[in-house]
Image 1 (spheres, rainbow, N blue to C red):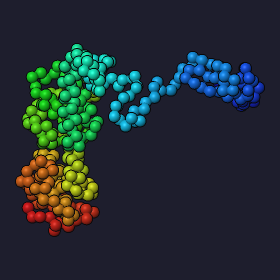
Image 2: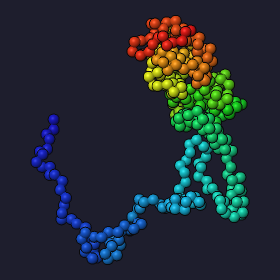
Image 3: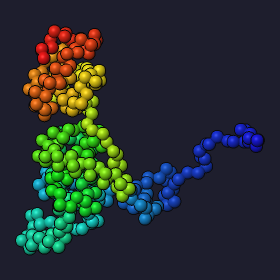
Length: 330
């Protein structure tokens, strides 16, 4: 093993006081330095000490707030960042005629006709439709952006030719919800897009397999299972104005009653468990109220509840702080 150098040879760092900065003309120390644009000037004698310095400041100051937003003039010469969801380089110069002459308006129209990109126009229309549908149902922004990237991939590959745009958008939103862990049922997507559930289901599987190929590995689309009841308890209880512990207890009931409600759809399981627990703790919600939130019939909820009611003695735990007598008879 090599010998380590002696620590006594290493001297601690100290500032060299023999070196100091002063103006070569007026010998002022310390000098009164003034930095202007790309040069450094001595403030006492005016001599230029350095020039052609790279300025790290902004290119052009903006005073857009001073005019109250009337003219909306921004002197910045820098455009927006490239939008990866659109085609082309997007580096075109746009001529504006706001507040201009009639000749400027004619020139702007002529330029728009020349630079019109029909593919971008169709993409932007689809993106606006996705935003509109998702905003109405409180879909997070990451799901919207993911759905847009899926739609862009289908258009770039000319996939699903002949399919209506509405069906492709509905399938993209449904797949984006699955991939982002934001559970939504077919009934909710149908309410959102007015696209039949059969059409969504058929195209959804094709879209998932298409985006899972090597050509689209950057999208990182994974094969997903169906919507799980665990993804729905919290949201449904929130929409019914029920406390958070109702969602937790309903989840525990669904796990215990897995064999009792075997074969039932996730919506039926969630609805029946919420109906059971809300009545158990004295915060009862009717089957009709739950059916409006879960988008299942109240008869389906009662049929699943009957199975839970028959085994209520073994399903209810002592720490649930409820009274079995509060349960409505099946």
